Image 1: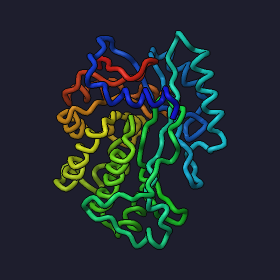
Image 2 (image 1 turned 180 degrees about the horizontal axis):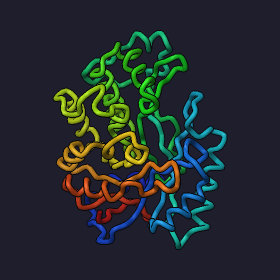
Image 3 (image 1 turned 180 degrees about the vertical axis):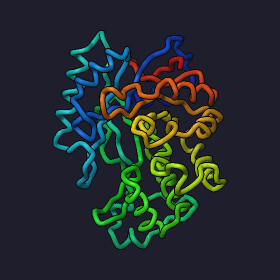
Image 4 (image 1 turned 30 degrees about the vertical axis):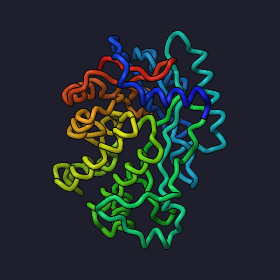
Length: 322
């Protein structure tokens, strides 16, 4: 971690002491382009952001994973990625602020346990002991910021499955890892989130309730279930203690996979009660979606009781009016 990077991450945890900016800003720090699973080149996003009136744009390519997959940036392209985002920062200085980030995955220590041990392990409805082998998928050194997320579970013939891929893959996680129990599956997902925030204290937490993406019409579980609400409530103190910013993510809406933002409005109200800061991101994979559903998201954020959002500026994290 560079001195600048450390200073920025530390600044994020001191933000409640600062007065909010009065100026409303248009920003997005969750952006994927063609180097991972997005479309078009990074410069196409910068140009689109300028046309849409953005003040700042952050790039957050999916960081390399320690196993072969179809959606993250190859590790051999990391240096070129950093160089290109820094070039764009200089090329468009004075027109838009450009920031270098990554979306970094939480990797459970179960990945190191081997297939037999993983198959035998069933996470209970409660929170398990944390694994000493758990890690981030990529070191956050040299970045302006990073978003930490949970996408992968250690199971399946390739050694992992993705919680947000197809409904068939979603069911396979439930069946292979949790013996068909949706309640145990959800408990396992939120246990990973808790371990992520407690162990690594990330500056930003991505799409907190991504597990709902494959749950259209509450096919697999109801968010109103007491057991599900208890899982989410149990996570709130860990996020607050870590000083982590939670993103409000419109990506599920933009891709037609959800009917509201991540996290759901009722979760935002819990976060507000705990004074946990928010930022607004689109999780764009095409330039035209950089501000998709932002007006709707701002209304939901206000309804939850918030009046300000976190934004990253050249001097560090600040607050801005919604």
